[in-house]
Amino acid sequence: MPASTPDPVTPLWRAAQVFRLLSCLYALGFQIAITHDLDRPAIGWLLFAVLVGWSIACAIAYLNGFGRRPAWVLAELAIVVALMLSTEFVASDQWALNNQSWPTTLWATNATISVAILLGPIYGMLSGVVIVAASTLAKGVLNYDLGRNATVVIELAVGLGVGMAAQTARRAHTDLERAARLAARTEERERLSRQVHDGAIQVLALVSRRGREIGGETAQLAELAGEQERALRRLVSSADAEPRNGELTDIGALLRQRASDRVSVSVPADPVLLEATVAEELAAAAGNALDNAAAHAGPDARAYVLVEDLGDTVTVSIRDDGVGISDGRLSAAVGEGRFGIAKSIVGRMDWLGGSAKLNTGPGCGTEWELTIPRR
Image (tube, rainbow, N blue to C red; front, side):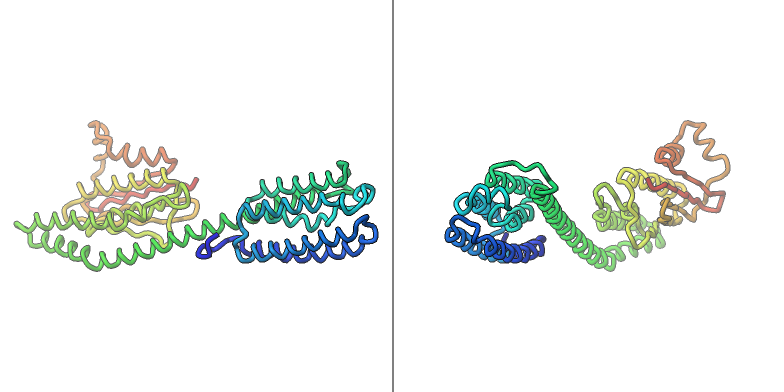
């Protein structure tokens, strides 16, 4: 792995080398204890020197990073198997049958750990199976008594546990990097949004407002400035509406795109996350309410959008200070075959399993309260 790229499992590699040191000390004690029982003790000590040299090489390679690749860990597995099979050259068949395979199963577990850290739990367990197979060949008999010989259980458990730990560390590191990139993009976007809001958007809003106040030929200029202001606001906030956390979308970010000099949008400081489809439908219902306000509330009316995250439910309130809706007007519209509100707002909220409440009256403005339960 390149030095510029941090390895998320570096702590596991360091811990593995501590285990390697302890296993070498255990193998040394075992070697001293069995020297007089070996048929060829000189060869045994020569092979033990190979064990120590290879252990040092592995520790250096893994700690420095250049050994953290498949070729190296497979070479370690091959050398461990070869040393285990060398039991027949240093000891009798009876000794091999009555003792653990030379040079101890504990030291051989280093290969399982290395494979598991680098390649994950599946390959870690497979390497454990290879170690067990080598031990079986060295003894010349397959021992099914797990109470007296737990080698297979230990190797499989080590391969699975260490492999899953390494896999989890890599996933956590990936998630952390993704979160850091998202935070950096969000911070930069907010910085640019502030600059644009403090400059171009405020100028366009001022031109739009003053143009409508002056009237006459400047009214057309005011309308064009208002359109450009709304387009620029949507452009600035559109990136906030990208789905987050997989299939979740921030409803507040979707609604902020509707903000303009005549529409004020207030949302919580934290994202209000809903399923992407639900958030889009809720935003569409709120957008239809805003469109109705723009068309019918009056030329000077303003609209206000409030998003509330109540835990089990999310409520979006759309209020305007316009002329309001007279009694019986909505029923008359349905009777005439105009189902805009009935379908685009009430029907959409019913389909989502939520509710749409309307409070209005002549001269009292209009307020929609759209509530959706969290699924």
